[in-house]
Length: 125
Image: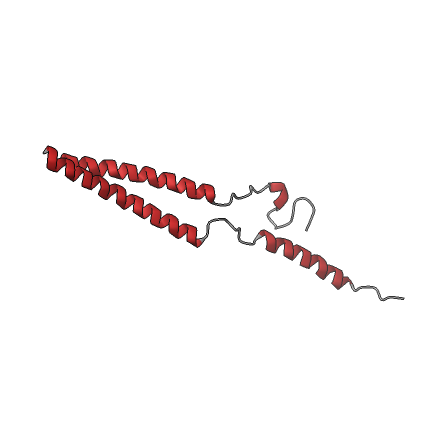
């Protein structure tokens, strides 16, 4: 006649299953946004910002030099270049965000509701 399993074994097995479930739910979420993509996006933003500002500054200076509109060409060029740079940065950020892995919306039924004592409201412990 085989020996019956002690009740502690069953309790430990259930505890291990619950622990694994909690560990999986608390695991860090993996997104498609890694360091290389972040660095590339950061340098792109920096280039667009400086390119817009200094490009507008240069074109405004040229306009002032040949049209004699000092200092309005430089001021207008910097303002237009800054606005253009902000627009390009916004567009680049949207592209990077669209390339990142979409996060799955969490269904409250999947997570289980927990009362103030930390017990599952669906009757599971």
